[in-house]
Each structure stands twice: as structure tokens, then as C-alpha cells.
Length: 292
Image (cartoon, rainbow, N blue to C red):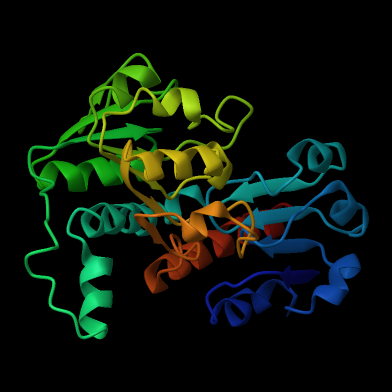
């Protein structure tokens, strides 16, 4: 069988998978592929599926499956997996890094030093200690973030319609009750009809004045223009962002907004995580091959 690696994985993965069949990174061979490995870049749409008549298995290296038409894949008898358990630490650490960078003014401090400026008096910092972190979506990643926040002496509150309790967070019955009390809000919910655009003009009114927003989850869970408005008005003190409407972003208003710390969708891109993803992919393909 032919295994197509369509996006970036650990460089050692092709050799590891070669015991199952031929492995290629040549996307022009999609029509021959029985197994396709993707991350966030490849969009497995109806058209993509129709152009891959031999495809039986799609594995998404990462968490979200909003780039896969799961309903059509199921209709065509195609199995779809992700590697959700692999990325938790990598994404949580980036979310926490963004949360540290903003109140410590690290990007401004670094840039000003490169420009030969000495802004010791101008750059005022605030601490995470005894602040409240609100987490929307406290699954694997949210829980790893909560652990780190507790270690820094933060109070953690969370909302998740599928989670009743969490050892590191006080669960709240509504999103509003998280937003009202949090100094920092971190987004970790999947993209669904309910979560699409959930951070908008109306929900931003529920934020504490001067709160910080961090998004390493799904780009379209926010309305970019509304977040920019909140940044300009001071309602939000800062926005830490790793996820975009498109990779790379096209005409995003965030690019020129004040108090934004940006990353190019690197949340899952640690060396360690790519190895973990590879191990899970190997296991899933091994199970699939064993059932043939």
C-alpha cells in the first residue's frame, strides 16, 4: 500500500513507516494513496476525497479535525483519526509562554533593546501570581495549562460543557461566569457551530477591563475585527495568538493591531511532539495493517 505524507512530520517517520509499504511525500500521487497523513495545511474536502479513490485512512497529526470533511469521509468508508494526546504539552507550554510574555512586556523590551533604547522606566510589568486564569475548554491541553498556572500561584476557573470537574480548576456553569472574573482567558475549544465566533463584541463586554486573551485553539472561535476593537479601546490589554483564519494569514486586521503577540501556528511544532505524533501514527497504521 502507498502511504502519502502530505504535511510536515518528523523526518524519521518515512523510514519508520516503510515496513508497512511504500512511503511518499509526492502529493501528485494522491490518487494512488491508501493512507494519507496530514496536519493543518492539507484540507481533506469532498473534492480532495473524490480525487483519492484508494484512500481508506486519514490521520491528522494534531488535535482539530475541522480541516477534514468527516461526514463525507465516513460516507466513503474512510477512517479518520487524530493524535490528540500527543500535542497537549507543546500547545499548553506555548499558551503559557504567551501569557508570560504579554504582562512582562517581553516583545517590547526585546525590540527596544535592538533599537538601542533603554526603557527601564517606561516598561511596567504585572505578575501572574494571584491572578485568575479562565480556561474555555479544559480537555487535555486546558488541563496541562491549568497545572502550570497553579504552579505559578494563579487561581484557575474553567468552562467546558463536557467536563464536570477538574483537579486544577474550579468549574463554572457558563462562559459568562468565567469571563467576568478572569484576568487571563485562554481558548481551547474545538471549532463547532457553537464555538465559531464565540469571542465577539457581545462576549467581549463580559471580559474584565484590561484582561488578556490567549488563543492557541481555533482561529475562527474569535471575530478578529471585534478583538482588534477591544485592543484599541483598552478593553483587552493584550492578545496572544498562534492560530489564523488561513496559514499564513491574509489581510488579517490583527497584523497591525496594538498589543498583539503573534506566532505562525507553531503550537504543536516541538521536536518532542513531532516524535510523539510519529509514535501514534505508527501505532494506528500498524493496527490498520493488522486488520487487513
